[in-house]
Length: 86
Length: 291
Image 1 (cartoon, helix red, strand yellow):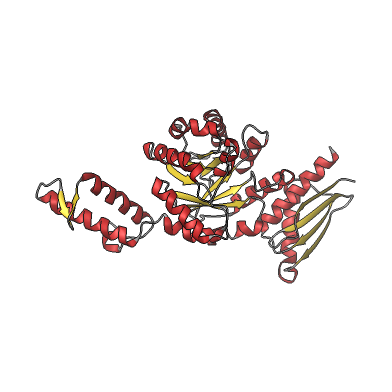
Image 2: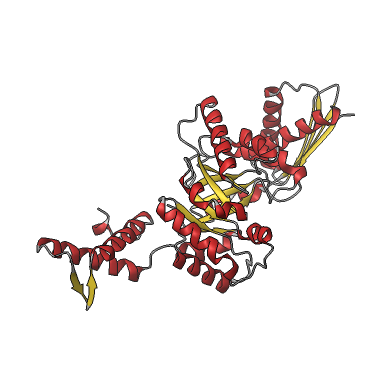
């Protein structure tokens, strides 16, 4: 299985884990879940679309990261997943 | 014109998102020593996303890339080149490295249609670089020299002390070169973040040698550094008196005059004018003097 992990559980960061999958699956657990869950999922979907990744299993544990941090961690995890396969 | 340069680790989201509240004149986002080798990719990606997001920051943005002699430096550059980045801080700088970096910057600026010239701040942290200071200070794009005392004393195999006697020569040499070629002289960080008194003493000494800015490795150091490198109100008042007296003397065709019992001639007037330019830059002059 291909897997990529990036980020941390420190404040204002997030830990992203991505695995290859047959379907798209996005799980988000956030300290601001009540207010931003849907926005974070939407952001993840947008980033995945931008890089043409339709079939991955994404888990994000968010500790209050801003959008650019989530995007950066997601892209790093994706690159690491790809590298793990190479 | 900057007084303080704050190092922020490039892979630290909490510090990134607070960068505008620390009060640094400039921030150096660090991809080199502050980022472990296994996290370089993550830091680069974070920097890229951050630069693409922030708008009009209230500080100048610099990035310390990894040395160009490693394979990491060019990869760093590829990720962080952005219109918002004022300059690149180059570790272990030598004349050849700076020329190489300048060529790479030409390529990236053209490819990405970056209109402004990205400047270079070489870190003087090897004996060879100290030897080459005069040449380095004159190279195109070089806007400042930064003393890296920890690595330099390591290279020299000498003890690094709080008193800093061992770095007196490179400090003075950097200050002279920077004055000669009208670029900024940035002093090395004071690494004991708990010693406020030591920091102030160190900054004052660096200033007395001609340094005009200092690096900070913790936001708590900024207040002291900014205060040290800002002209004091007493100095500003004195400079204003000198310039006013000079204007009066000029009307009477006098090149030299006396003020409060001291002789004032052109060098003294020039120094007062330079101080007022700095004071104006940092908003220290009253409205009536702003012009």
